[in-house]
Image (tube, rainbow, N blue to C red; front, side, top):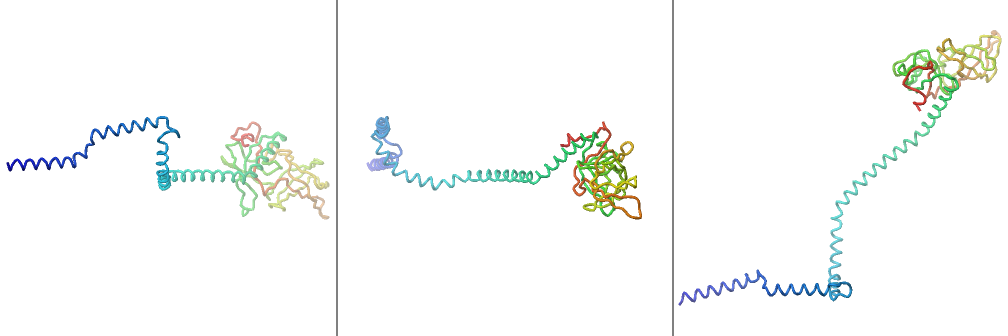
Length: 310
């Protein structure tokens, strides 16, 4: 009897434990059915939706309550969400700024060198005209160095040589007139003796009367960079502003004929001497030499032409 009472009490305690904990773990079948019916009813009532829906007041009330909360949450989270976009935007902006700076630098260089490019194009056009007018074949070249003044010689180095068909004792000119003659060459360069050099002598002819003489350099540049003309006929007196051109050498070396040299600015004479000596101002501005042309024999093969150089 006592054992039965104990078993009864143990079973009653177990039932209480299951009712307290186990029953809460699994909802009753009736409760589940009730929830399903409520959901179906709400779906049916809200089928048409819109402002006429019976659930619209409840939906509006929920919106009024949750709307500010959602807005505040969005405001708080937005800076953190935008961090990846910020880094991407910064990287993109840096790339755009670098590209714009490079473009601006290129435009500035074009603007700064536009005057030089225009001047050089004009020189090419003028040299091409000189080639057509004279009938000589020219190899274009640029002055890349001036001879040292300590050597007491007036020479320049040009960026064309034997590979371009240039040899020693060939005439060098530009679009203004006679520059000098080729002294020596390498495969890619040539040294040019200017007509201003003290050791330079050029045969010249006065354009107004075709009288001939010899022009000698004085070794000076600038305003004092003049030539002195001694006519073969001592009795003739050149006129001011008479133009002097080359009379030419045998075989066209070192000077071809008909190239303008300069203009008579004055005539010097001495009572003790019967000869007259004229001062010639060169047409070429030797302080601003850039593009020159070397006269080569017609048909000379080479790597350059005036058309290609442009």
